[in-house]
Length: 243
Length: 217
Image: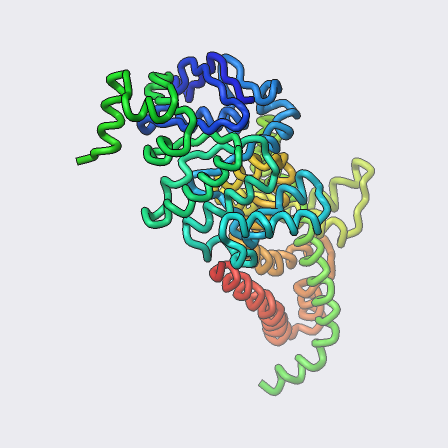
Protein backbone atom coordinates (compact mmCIF):
# COMPACT_ATOMS: atom_id res chain seq x y z
CA UNK A 1 0.00 0.00 0.00
CA UNK A 2 2.83 2.35 0.91
CA UNK A 3 6.12 1.71 -0.82
CA UNK A 4 9.45 3.51 -0.46
CA UNK A 5 12.28 2.75 -2.80
CA UNK A 6 15.81 4.07 -2.27
CA UNK A 7 14.58 7.36 -0.79
CA UNK A 8 17.22 10.01 -0.16
CA UNK A 9 16.67 13.32 1.59
CA UNK A 10 19.06 16.07 2.65
CA UNK A 11 18.55 19.15 4.78
CA UNK A 12 21.22 21.45 3.40
CA UNK A 13 24.45 19.47 3.52
CA UNK A 14 23.18 16.93 6.02
CA UNK A 15 21.81 13.78 4.42
CA UNK A 16 19.10 12.50 6.79
CA UNK A 17 17.76 9.65 4.65
CA UNK A 18 20.39 7.61 2.84
CA UNK A 19 18.42 5.20 0.74
CA UNK A 20 15.33 3.94 2.53
CA UNK A 21 13.52 1.01 0.94
CA UNK A 22 10.49 -0.31 2.77
CA UNK A 23 6.86 -1.15 2.27
CA UNK A 24 3.71 -1.29 4.34
CA UNK A 25 0.92 -3.69 3.44
CA UNK A 26 -2.77 -3.05 3.94
CA UNK A 27 -3.82 -3.74 7.54
CA UNK A 28 -0.24 -3.86 8.73
CA UNK A 29 1.07 -2.01 11.78
CA UNK A 30 4.69 -0.98 11.34
CA UNK A 31 6.63 0.71 14.11
CA UNK A 32 9.72 2.75 13.34
CA UNK A 33 12.19 3.05 16.20
CA UNK A 34 15.61 4.61 16.44
CA UNK A 35 17.61 7.37 18.10
CA UNK A 36 16.73 11.06 17.79
CA UNK A 37 17.80 12.60 14.52
CA UNK A 38 17.95 9.22 12.78
CA UNK A 39 15.40 10.30 10.17
CA UNK A 40 12.33 8.45 11.53
CA UNK A 41 9.98 11.42 11.45
CA UNK A 42 11.34 12.57 8.11
CA UNK A 43 10.20 9.28 6.56
CA UNK A 44 6.63 9.89 7.72
CA UNK A 45 6.71 13.50 6.60
CA UNK A 46 7.90 12.45 3.15
CA UNK A 47 5.12 9.86 2.82
CA UNK A 48 2.37 12.47 3.01
CA UNK A 49 4.33 15.19 1.29
CA UNK A 50 5.02 17.53 4.20
CA UNK A 51 8.65 17.24 3.10
CA UNK A 52 10.00 16.72 -0.38
CA UNK A 53 12.61 14.03 -1.04
CA UNK A 54 15.60 14.27 -3.31
CA UNK A 55 15.94 10.82 -4.84
CA UNK A 56 14.06 7.53 -5.05
CA UNK A 57 10.30 7.04 -5.12
CA UNK A 58 7.49 6.91 -2.61
CA UNK A 59 4.10 5.67 -3.67
CA UNK A 60 0.77 5.31 -1.92
CA UNK A 61 -1.67 2.86 -3.53
CA UNK A 62 0.42 3.06 -6.69
CA UNK A 63 0.24 6.87 -6.78
CA UNK A 64 3.62 8.60 -6.73
CA UNK A 65 4.02 11.06 -3.86
CA UNK A 66 5.02 14.46 -5.19
CA UNK A 67 4.23 17.37 -2.89
CA UNK A 68 4.15 19.81 -5.81
CA UNK A 69 1.62 17.78 -7.82
CA UNK A 70 -2.16 18.16 -7.48
CA UNK A 71 -2.40 14.44 -6.62
CA UNK A 72 -0.92 15.22 -3.19
CA UNK A 73 -4.38 16.25 -1.95
CA UNK A 74 -5.79 12.85 -2.81
CA UNK A 75 -2.82 11.15 -1.09
CA UNK A 76 -3.23 13.26 2.03
CA UNK A 77 -6.92 12.45 2.30
CA UNK A 78 -6.03 8.75 2.07
CA UNK A 79 -3.11 8.88 4.50
CA UNK A 80 -3.81 10.88 7.65
CA UNK A 81 -1.20 12.11 10.07
CA UNK A 82 -1.09 12.42 13.85
CA UNK A 83 1.57 14.76 15.16
CA UNK A 84 3.78 14.73 18.23
CA UNK A 85 2.45 18.13 19.31
CA UNK A 86 -1.19 17.38 18.34
CA UNK A 87 -1.50 20.52 16.17
CA UNK A 88 -5.21 20.86 16.82
CA UNK A 89 -6.78 24.10 15.64
CA UNK A 90 -7.06 26.08 18.91
CA UNK A 91 -9.76 28.42 17.61
CA UNK A 92 -12.20 25.59 16.94
CA UNK A 93 -13.94 23.17 19.28
CA UNK A 94 -12.94 19.51 19.47
CA UNK A 95 -15.89 18.54 17.26
CA UNK A 96 -15.16 21.30 14.74
CA UNK A 97 -11.54 20.10 14.56
CA UNK A 98 -12.78 16.63 13.71
CA UNK A 99 -15.27 17.69 11.02
CA UNK A 100 -13.06 20.39 9.44
CA UNK A 101 -11.57 18.03 6.83
CA UNK A 102 -14.77 16.17 5.91
CA UNK A 103 -16.71 19.43 5.67
CA UNK A 104 -14.27 21.67 3.80
CA UNK A 105 -11.90 19.32 2.00
CA UNK A 106 -14.21 16.42 1.16
CA UNK A 107 -17.32 18.63 1.04
CA UNK A 108 -19.53 16.17 2.87
CA UNK A 109 -23.00 17.28 3.98
CA UNK A 110 -22.84 18.94 7.39
CA UNK A 111 -25.29 16.58 9.08
CA UNK A 112 -23.37 13.47 8.04
CA UNK A 113 -20.02 14.97 9.03
CA UNK A 114 -21.40 16.02 12.42
CA UNK A 115 -22.85 12.61 13.09
CA UNK A 116 -19.61 10.81 12.26
CA UNK A 117 -17.60 13.44 14.15
CA UNK A 118 -19.56 12.77 17.32
CA UNK A 119 -19.25 9.03 16.85
CA UNK A 120 -15.49 9.35 16.43
CA UNK A 121 -15.15 11.48 19.55
CA UNK A 122 -17.12 8.79 21.40
CA UNK A 123 -14.82 6.15 19.95
CA UNK A 124 -11.76 7.88 21.47
CA UNK A 125 -13.60 8.35 24.76
CA UNK A 126 -14.30 12.07 24.48
CA UNK A 127 -18.01 12.26 23.68
CA UNK A 128 -18.47 14.82 26.47
CA UNK A 129 -15.71 17.14 25.16
CA UNK A 130 -17.24 17.92 21.75
CA UNK A 131 -17.76 21.61 22.49
CA UNK A 132 -14.51 22.24 24.36
CA UNK A 133 -11.62 24.16 22.76
CA UNK A 134 -8.29 22.28 22.59
CA UNK A 135 -6.36 24.53 25.01
CA UNK A 136 -8.77 23.43 27.75
CA UNK A 137 -8.02 19.74 27.17
CA UNK A 138 -5.16 17.69 28.62
CA UNK A 139 -2.40 16.53 26.29
CA UNK A 140 -3.79 13.02 26.20
CA UNK A 141 -7.27 14.30 25.36
CA UNK A 142 -5.88 16.59 22.66
CA UNK A 143 -4.03 13.72 21.07
CA UNK A 144 -7.17 11.58 21.08
CA UNK A 145 -9.08 14.42 19.37
CA UNK A 146 -6.24 14.55 16.83
CA UNK A 147 -6.66 10.82 16.20
CA UNK A 148 -10.40 11.35 15.73
CA UNK A 149 -9.59 14.17 13.30
CA UNK A 150 -7.32 11.83 11.34
CA UNK A 151 -10.00 9.09 11.32
CA UNK A 152 -12.66 11.54 10.15
CA UNK A 153 -10.96 11.62 6.74
CA UNK A 154 -11.74 7.88 6.50
CA UNK A 155 -8.13 7.25 5.58
CA UNK A 156 -6.66 3.99 4.32
CA UNK A 157 -3.66 4.47 6.60
CA UNK A 158 -2.60 6.70 9.49
CA UNK A 159 0.91 7.95 10.15
CA UNK A 160 1.75 8.58 13.81
CA UNK A 161 4.74 10.83 14.47
CA UNK A 162 5.81 10.14 18.08
CA UNK A 163 2.20 10.47 19.24
CA UNK A 164 2.99 10.06 22.95
CA UNK A 165 6.34 11.84 23.23
CA UNK A 166 4.81 15.15 24.35
CA UNK A 167 2.50 13.58 26.95
CA UNK A 168 2.76 13.27 30.70
CA UNK A 169 3.54 9.64 31.50
CA UNK A 170 0.16 8.93 33.09
CA UNK A 171 -1.66 10.04 29.93
CA UNK A 172 0.33 7.87 27.51
CA UNK A 173 -1.80 4.80 28.23
CA UNK A 174 -5.07 6.39 27.05
CA UNK A 175 -3.59 7.31 23.69
CA UNK A 176 -1.86 3.96 23.19
CA UNK A 177 -5.13 2.26 24.12
CA UNK A 178 -6.97 4.08 21.34
CA UNK A 179 -4.19 3.23 18.89
CA UNK A 180 -4.25 -0.42 19.89
CA UNK A 181 -7.98 -0.59 19.24
CA UNK A 182 -7.42 0.92 15.80
CA UNK A 183 -4.79 -1.69 15.06
CA UNK A 184 -7.14 -4.46 16.22
CA UNK A 185 -9.80 -3.10 13.85
CA UNK A 186 -7.38 -3.56 10.95
CA UNK A 187 -6.22 0.03 10.34
CA UNK A 188 -2.97 0.33 8.44
CA UNK A 189 -0.59 2.24 10.70
CA UNK A 190 2.97 3.51 10.57
CA UNK A 191 4.07 4.58 14.02
CA UNK A 192 7.27 6.39 14.90
CA UNK A 193 7.62 5.76 18.60
CA UNK A 194 9.86 5.26 21.61
CA UNK A 195 7.24 3.02 23.24
CA UNK A 196 9.00 -0.31 22.82
CA UNK A 197 6.27 -2.08 24.80
CA UNK A 198 3.62 -0.84 22.36
CA UNK A 199 5.75 -1.88 19.39
CA UNK A 200 6.23 -5.36 20.81
CA UNK A 201 2.54 -5.88 21.61
CA UNK A 202 0.80 -4.16 18.71
CA UNK A 203 3.16 -3.92 15.75
CA UNK A 204 3.44 -6.57 13.08
CA UNK A 205 6.82 -5.36 12.02
CA UNK A 206 9.50 -3.06 13.40
CA UNK A 207 12.08 -1.03 11.52
CA UNK A 208 15.15 0.14 13.40
CA UNK A 209 16.58 3.25 11.77
CA UNK A 210 19.93 4.83 12.59
CA UNK A 211 21.91 7.38 10.64
CA UNK A 212 19.38 7.55 7.82
CA UNK A 213 19.41 3.86 6.95
CA UNK A 214 17.32 0.85 8.01
CA UNK A 215 19.75 -1.06 10.21
CA UNK A 216 17.46 -3.94 11.02
CA UNK A 217 13.86 -4.95 10.44
CA UNK A 218 11.70 -7.91 11.23
CA UNK A 219 8.62 -9.23 12.97
CA UNK A 220 8.07 -7.12 16.10
CA UNK A 221 8.40 -9.74 18.84
CA UNK A 222 11.34 -11.56 17.36
CA UNK A 223 13.28 -8.42 16.59
CA UNK A 224 12.66 -6.64 19.86
CA UNK A 225 13.34 -9.73 21.94
CA UNK A 226 16.38 -10.92 20.01
CA UNK A 227 17.86 -8.04 18.05
CA UNK A 228 20.63 -9.23 15.74
CA UNK A 229 22.51 -6.07 14.91
CA UNK A 230 24.81 -4.66 17.62
CA UNK A 231 23.44 -1.12 17.08
CA UNK A 232 19.87 -2.36 17.60
CA UNK A 233 20.97 -4.24 20.69
CA UNK A 234 22.70 -1.16 22.05
CA UNK A 235 19.72 1.11 21.30
CA UNK A 236 17.18 -1.21 22.90
CA UNK A 237 19.39 -1.63 25.97
CA UNK A 238 19.56 2.15 26.40
CA UNK A 239 15.81 2.66 25.92
CA UNK A 240 14.71 -0.22 28.11
CA UNK A 241 17.32 0.22 30.85
CA UNK A 242 18.28 3.90 30.94
CA UNK A 243 20.10 3.47 34.27
CA UNK B 1 -13.00 81.20 28.80
CA UNK B 2 -16.48 82.55 28.09
CA UNK B 3 -15.06 83.95 24.83
CA UNK B 4 -13.99 80.40 23.95
CA UNK B 5 -17.43 78.97 24.64
CA UNK B 6 -18.99 81.71 22.59
CA UNK B 7 -16.67 80.98 19.65
CA UNK B 8 -17.13 77.26 20.10
CA UNK B 9 -20.90 77.50 19.74
CA UNK B 10 -20.46 79.64 16.66
CA UNK B 11 -17.83 77.53 14.87
CA UNK B 12 -18.88 74.06 15.95
CA UNK B 13 -21.43 73.48 13.15
CA UNK B 14 -18.95 74.51 10.44
CA UNK B 15 -16.22 72.34 11.95
CA UNK B 16 -18.68 69.46 12.09
CA UNK B 17 -18.70 69.46 8.28
CA UNK B 18 -14.96 68.96 8.52
CA UNK B 19 -15.45 66.12 10.97
CA UNK B 20 -17.67 64.31 8.49
CA UNK B 21 -14.97 64.52 5.81
CA UNK B 22 -12.29 63.48 8.31
CA UNK B 23 -14.31 60.37 9.11
CA UNK B 24 -14.92 59.64 5.43
CA UNK B 25 -11.21 59.97 4.61
CA UNK B 26 -10.18 57.88 7.64
CA UNK B 27 -12.66 55.06 7.04
CA UNK B 28 -12.06 55.03 3.29
CA UNK B 29 -8.30 54.86 3.57
CA UNK B 30 -8.56 52.38 6.46
CA UNK B 31 -10.59 50.04 4.28
CA UNK B 32 -8.28 50.47 1.28
CA UNK B 33 -5.10 50.06 3.32
CA UNK B 34 -6.51 46.91 4.96
CA UNK B 35 -7.38 45.30 1.64
CA UNK B 36 -4.09 46.30 -0.02
CA UNK B 37 -2.09 45.38 3.10
CA UNK B 38 -3.70 41.96 3.11
CA UNK B 39 -2.82 41.49 -0.56
CA UNK B 40 0.84 42.52 0.01
CA UNK B 41 1.05 40.27 3.08
CA UNK B 42 -0.43 37.29 1.19
CA UNK B 43 2.05 37.83 -1.63
CA UNK B 44 4.81 38.00 0.95
CA UNK B 45 3.97 34.65 2.54
CA UNK B 46 2.80 32.94 -0.68
CA UNK B 47 6.00 30.95 -1.00
CA UNK B 48 6.49 32.29 -4.51
CA UNK B 49 9.80 34.11 -4.75
CA UNK B 50 8.55 36.44 -7.50
CA UNK B 51 5.40 37.52 -5.63
CA UNK B 52 7.29 37.80 -2.36
CA UNK B 53 10.06 40.04 -3.66
CA UNK B 54 7.59 42.08 -5.69
CA UNK B 55 5.62 42.73 -2.51
CA UNK B 56 8.76 43.46 -0.48
CA UNK B 57 9.94 45.96 -3.10
CA UNK B 58 6.55 47.66 -3.24
CA UNK B 59 6.37 47.97 0.52
CA UNK B 60 9.82 49.54 0.61
CA UNK B 61 8.96 52.08 -2.08
CA UNK B 62 5.66 53.00 -0.44
CA UNK B 63 7.27 53.34 2.98
CA UNK B 64 10.02 55.51 1.53
CA UNK B 65 7.68 58.18 0.13
CA UNK B 66 6.30 60.81 2.53
CA UNK B 67 2.51 60.73 2.62
CA UNK B 68 2.30 64.35 1.57
CA UNK B 69 4.39 63.71 -1.55
CA UNK B 70 2.23 60.74 -2.43
CA UNK B 71 -0.87 62.93 -2.10
CA UNK B 72 0.64 65.66 -4.28
CA UNK B 73 1.59 63.07 -6.84
CA UNK B 74 -1.90 61.60 -7.06
CA UNK B 75 -3.66 64.96 -7.08
CA UNK B 76 -1.32 67.18 -9.10
CA UNK B 77 0.74 64.81 -11.26
CA UNK B 78 -1.72 62.08 -12.25
CA UNK B 79 -3.84 64.50 -14.33
CA UNK B 80 -0.77 64.85 -16.61
CA UNK B 81 -1.21 61.15 -17.34
CA UNK B 82 -4.91 61.58 -17.98
CA UNK B 83 -6.06 60.38 -14.57
CA UNK B 84 -7.99 63.09 -12.80
CA UNK B 85 -9.08 62.36 -9.27
CA UNK B 86 -11.22 64.45 -7.01
CA UNK B 87 -9.41 65.72 -3.92
CA UNK B 88 -11.33 63.26 -1.75
CA UNK B 89 -10.54 60.31 -4.05
CA UNK B 90 -6.86 61.26 -4.15
CA UNK B 91 -6.77 61.60 -0.35
CA UNK B 92 -8.32 58.20 0.29
CA UNK B 93 -6.17 56.55 -2.38
CA UNK B 94 -2.97 58.22 -1.14
CA UNK B 95 -3.48 57.51 2.55
CA UNK B 96 -4.73 54.02 1.74
CA UNK B 97 -1.63 53.19 -0.30
CA UNK B 98 0.74 54.81 2.19
CA UNK B 99 -0.70 52.88 5.12
CA UNK B 100 -1.01 49.60 3.22
CA UNK B 101 2.74 49.15 3.69
CA UNK B 102 2.45 49.31 7.49
CA UNK B 103 -0.66 47.15 7.47
CA UNK B 104 1.13 44.57 5.31
CA UNK B 105 4.06 44.28 7.72
CA UNK B 106 1.66 44.01 10.62
CA UNK B 107 -0.39 41.31 8.91
CA UNK B 108 2.73 39.42 7.87
CA UNK B 109 4.02 39.41 11.44
CA UNK B 110 0.68 38.00 12.58
CA UNK B 111 0.63 35.31 9.92
CA UNK B 112 4.22 34.28 10.57
CA UNK B 113 3.55 34.05 14.31
CA UNK B 114 1.23 31.09 13.70
CA UNK B 115 2.87 27.79 14.60
CA UNK B 116 4.15 25.84 11.56
CA UNK B 117 2.42 22.79 13.00
CA UNK B 118 -0.94 24.42 12.32
CA UNK B 119 -0.13 24.70 8.63
CA UNK B 120 1.13 21.12 8.52
CA UNK B 121 -2.02 19.87 10.23
CA UNK B 122 -4.14 21.72 7.68
CA UNK B 123 -2.08 20.30 4.81
CA UNK B 124 -2.24 16.82 6.26
CA UNK B 125 -6.03 16.82 5.97
CA UNK B 126 -5.70 17.86 2.35
CA UNK B 127 -6.17 21.63 2.54
CA UNK B 128 -4.56 23.72 -0.17
CA UNK B 129 -2.70 26.97 0.42
CA UNK B 130 -5.69 29.27 0.20
CA UNK B 131 -7.98 27.16 2.35
CA UNK B 132 -5.22 26.79 4.95
CA UNK B 133 -4.98 30.59 5.06
CA UNK B 134 -8.70 31.14 5.25
CA UNK B 135 -9.70 28.39 7.69
CA UNK B 136 -6.62 28.00 9.88
CA UNK B 137 -4.02 30.79 9.67
CA UNK B 138 -5.99 34.04 9.27
CA UNK B 139 -8.58 33.39 12.01
CA UNK B 140 -5.70 32.88 14.45
CA UNK B 141 -3.59 35.71 13.07
CA UNK B 142 -6.45 38.19 13.56
CA UNK B 143 -6.11 37.94 17.33
CA UNK B 144 -2.42 38.79 17.12
CA UNK B 145 -2.88 41.58 14.60
CA UNK B 146 -5.85 43.41 16.16
CA UNK B 147 -4.08 45.42 18.90
CA UNK B 148 -1.51 46.98 16.51
CA UNK B 149 -4.31 47.40 13.96
CA UNK B 150 -6.12 49.58 16.48
CA UNK B 151 -3.06 51.78 16.79
CA UNK B 152 -2.90 52.15 13.02
CA UNK B 153 -6.53 53.31 13.06
CA UNK B 154 -5.65 56.08 15.52
CA UNK B 155 -2.63 57.13 13.46
CA UNK B 156 -4.76 57.23 10.33
CA UNK B 157 -7.33 59.43 12.00
CA UNK B 158 -4.62 61.98 12.75
CA UNK B 159 -2.89 61.62 9.39
CA UNK B 160 -6.18 62.21 7.57
CA UNK B 161 -5.40 65.88 8.31
CA UNK B 162 -2.75 65.68 5.60
CA UNK B 163 -5.61 65.56 3.10
CA UNK B 164 -5.96 69.28 3.81
CA UNK B 165 -2.84 69.83 1.70
CA UNK B 166 -4.76 68.81 -1.41
CA UNK B 167 -7.84 70.91 -0.56
CA UNK B 168 -9.99 68.29 1.15
CA UNK B 169 -11.96 70.46 3.57
CA UNK B 170 -11.68 68.07 6.48
CA UNK B 171 -11.44 69.17 10.09
CA UNK B 172 -7.92 70.64 9.99
CA UNK B 173 -8.55 72.63 6.81
CA UNK B 174 -11.96 73.84 8.02
CA UNK B 175 -10.22 75.06 11.17
CA UNK B 176 -7.52 76.81 9.20
CA UNK B 177 -10.11 78.51 6.96
CA UNK B 178 -12.14 79.79 9.90
CA UNK B 179 -9.05 80.88 11.76
CA UNK B 180 -7.65 82.85 8.83
CA UNK B 181 -10.96 84.61 8.21
CA UNK B 182 -11.76 85.42 11.87
CA UNK B 183 -8.23 85.60 13.36
CA UNK B 184 -9.56 83.62 16.34
CA UNK B 185 -6.63 81.23 16.16
CA UNK B 186 -6.61 80.10 19.77
CA UNK B 187 -10.33 79.32 19.99
CA UNK B 188 -10.48 77.59 16.63
CA UNK B 189 -7.41 75.39 16.95
CA UNK B 190 -8.20 74.49 20.55
CA UNK B 191 -11.61 73.39 19.34
CA UNK B 192 -10.07 71.45 16.43
CA UNK B 193 -7.65 69.69 18.77
CA UNK B 194 -10.47 68.80 21.17
CA UNK B 195 -12.53 67.39 18.32
CA UNK B 196 -9.66 65.15 17.16
CA UNK B 197 -9.23 63.98 20.74
CA UNK B 198 -12.93 63.23 21.01
CA UNK B 199 -12.97 61.22 17.81
CA UNK B 200 -10.10 59.19 19.19
CA UNK B 201 -12.12 58.02 22.19
CA UNK B 202 -14.25 55.38 20.45
CA UNK B 203 -11.14 54.09 18.70
CA UNK B 204 -9.26 53.79 21.99
CA UNK B 205 -12.17 51.90 23.49
CA UNK B 206 -12.19 49.61 20.45
CA UNK B 207 -8.45 48.95 20.77
CA UNK B 208 -8.85 48.19 24.46
CA UNK B 209 -11.65 45.78 23.62
CA UNK B 210 -9.44 44.06 21.02
CA UNK B 211 -6.58 43.77 23.47
CA UNK B 212 -8.78 42.25 26.14
CA UNK B 213 -10.12 39.74 23.65
CA UNK B 214 -6.64 38.87 22.45
CA UNK B 215 -5.49 38.32 26.04
CA UNK B 216 -8.43 36.08 26.84
CA UNK B 217 -7.52 33.46 24.24
